[in-house]
Length: 630
Figure 1: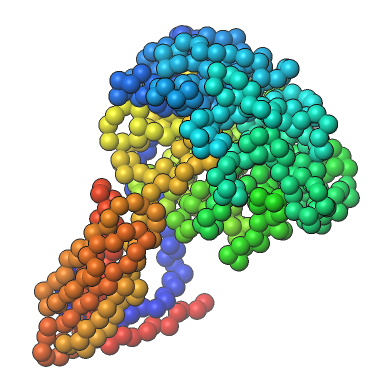
Figure 2: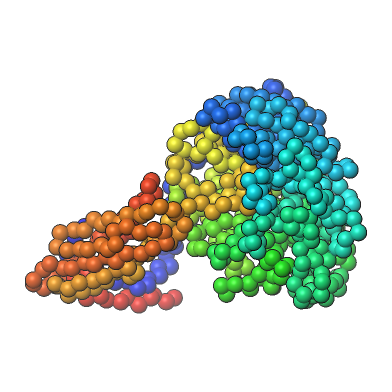
């Protein structure tokens, strides 16, 4: 592109009468389109659905993905049309997300399910029961995760007990349902405090980078049980007292109470972790992961739930200390937003809002944000600066009280700004329905699509669990799959999502349900500087910078207008990496009042293409226009 002009380089211009539009007003994201509904129902009836998030996998090796979900029965559905492929019946409800993994190293996938009635069941890809057992002495299995604890190629199943009792909350099973030595934990007689795990209360990851994963389990107390792969409790930093383990160090709002060992109830508050699912992520990109635990803060002079005040996140390191880094200090918690108290905790009015942690980099700045729904009827998103940006927190719209479920986070159009997808539910009355919501990265609502009407015999519908974003039909675009309270499984197409980046694509981050999401491959192209000025016949150089984690080789190219010679070296790079673009003006005479060039530079790595425009002014005079002040 070539233009003759007198250049005005505007450094800052504020116009009060023309406010900048929000991203929601200019979004190119298309609305979700209903694909199929009432999946798994035996119409006109549907089983009551709970908080389980669907999974998507090719269970039978036919290269056609199935959608797997549990209400009471577990069903596998044809992804293309929602038709039933198999059903595994049960009279016990499914609370945690369905896990899918090859747990016996036979190259085929198994379906792992936790249920009420103290049941843990493993099915093969055809829905036949492989084994079933009672992992505890009683209670409900609401906590379920599957992972390889020690990178030996053998995946273990981790479950948590949803019932009272101060020890034996966590159990781990290996091949054939054998209890792993050292479990259940905490063991009887060991130090520490704990109780039941009434949501998906576990995160499993390697926080100290030793090649072995740890298990972090907040319980129905203000304590967190943390154990290694063999059930041994993790040591806490000596600042909390010599020889203490995690489950002996109470969590409080104020660090001073943590160090003291107790709260002065009435003036100092502490959380309860009964209904909050944790997550693990490297929040600042330094190669070390942190635990992010949400707590229901209450006035302990009144008690829980009557004294409940708000939910807040804690960021904790391997030694249980509070995290800080990159100028961010989480030894002091964020201030709660006004209106953060519970709207209802009466399941006869509206089903409980459970609070699941999601961690994702919404704006591709290298730092992760913390998202969670709360009993205040809002979806929150905290940046590491301890504030909620833009339109966050987002209040769920609709008649009466509405709650949000755990969100999925997907950069649908791969523009570097993520979208947030979640479902909501209404009060339990009058055939009201919740919605599938799509927000932009700053919490502006792009779309809200009503979920289907409740099936016969039920008087409301909504989505209590996290949606799952995956390709369920083999076409270019992704779909979003929702398990609902009263319309079975529902699927929506996401037009224009072929190049999407999935940051947190299902409940608890993956089909292993560990509270960890693998960072998607990313590449960002930038230039320093992006604008230069030279005299005719002169030369200007620009440093092209690649950042991200995309594997493979990236090739640089440039579209350069006539009148310039150019050189780009090196022509290829890995990510991260850099190259130098040199532009030389070919004119022998002055180009006054100025000649403006725009050069498009591309970086190509397989199907991923990033482009930027850099600019060059020859013989022009930059003029700075001062900012207009009111």
